[in-house]
Image (cartoon, rainbow, N blue to C red; front, side, top):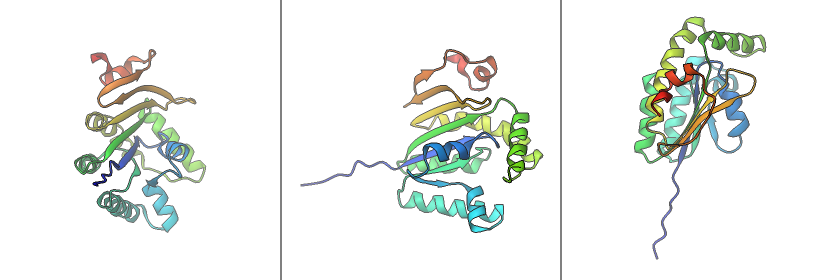
Length: 191
């Protein structure tokens, strides 16, 4: 008798610009269910600087990938390394779950980071927020196109709003009340 294991490891990508609520989302929905790789938390827990924490998180996620362990990452999605890593996960047979937390302006991102700092959280230089904002949104399409499941959430207001969800490249839900800015940014006029 041959027994096959149909287990497909999963990666959860919790993405969005700085201050978009990635850690809050991961803590609410994923904490205790799978490992969450968050360089900011690694820096605090290990008492190391952000660069060292970033390197540690890269090693940890590579280890999980090699061992076919399901896990989650938090990312601003502002660099090519993130895209390459997620593509590597796809090639290794991972199910790609992609949650993107959108903020409607880089100024809201600045304000959220400032609020976090006032609550003893970590700071991000303004120039980094500005640079990452557009890159993050532009990279959304790259990851959406290889994801098995995608959720686009608008986290600009007090209550988070689901804009759409996609499973296997087919829309499962789309909000009936989407503003034109979101339609244009995320190419929803084509649907």
